[in-house]
Image 1 (cartoon, rainbow, N blue to C red):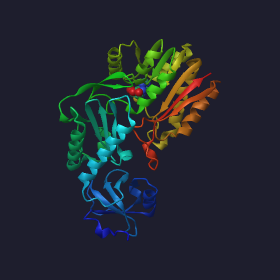
Image 2: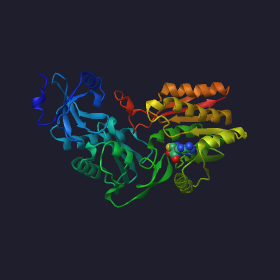
Image 3: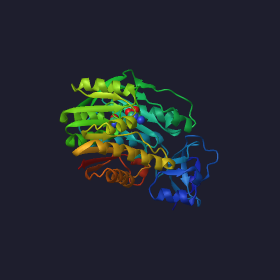
Image 4: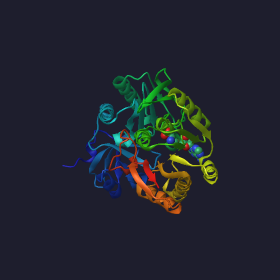
Length: 397
Ligand code: SAH
């Protein structure tokens, strides 16, 4: 017998349209506001029972009164003990990483929807944890308490920091809050990936401190790198530091001076000599390419150009431009490692844009590796939004 909305253990009820219900049946976990039929008196961030228009029970979700994503599912069943469910999900997320993560003490422990903990990101940097809250529900005191308690008990971190993205809080209509320590007192540490060491400051830097999603791609790129290398959009030097043991000379480029200062400290930590250049990558690539500068290995890892579907065309032009310049500078037999972290640019579109650049430059490209984000950022097949990173390693002739 399908459960009726009247036996939902006292949960507030949200009714979704047929389109919303079908989306959930297909395995997605989101229902957009436009597919909400009724959510009378449901409080921001509440746990809700979800029913279709015939009152058939579809599962338990977390509700947002502000986001276009009105509900995010957390279980197919009716949940009466949210605390236990959260603890179980965290334990499962930790166990999954124990299985798939190698050669590092820095990785993502919780990846939101992909770990059935929508709105929560937790990254580990050696003995420090860094947490991001993205929704009204994950921001409630009761949920925060359970998460911090479970993470501390299971992982015994020296400290847990919260990294706040003010734009996310504004969109979720949450009161402003600053990044701070939620547990412990330690704010800096050193972590390592693939034998390369990095400084970490819990309350500084972009994202939660590093781009952990590229970890496996660093190791892949290092396999092919040689000669003179250029790491464009280098941030703290993730690629540059991995390329250095295999290359005669490595140069890293970024527009952020604070990022390059950390990159330089990281080079010293690993006993490497790397040249860091503070510049706008587009200008630098144009100038270097026309000045006849040549490289054997180039990495392109720009920020997400397509923040939404509406600027896809501009984003594709940006990717093409960068790849054109890089191809102009690569010597025959060179290696291009080119990335896109825009969810809205598909792998197919990205490959096509790089192929166009190759045609325009009369170069032949062979795919050595067609890669994505590291396994600790799992891609849930029924939630395509969980997969966003593209990373192609190409042999250029
Ligand atoms: N490759 C890095 C991550 C790059 S993130 C890693 O593996 O850690 C994107 C970087 O691009 C950021 O460090 C940002 O400061 C830089 N950036 C953004 N716009 C830029 C521009 N126009 N020119 C140069 N760098 C830019």
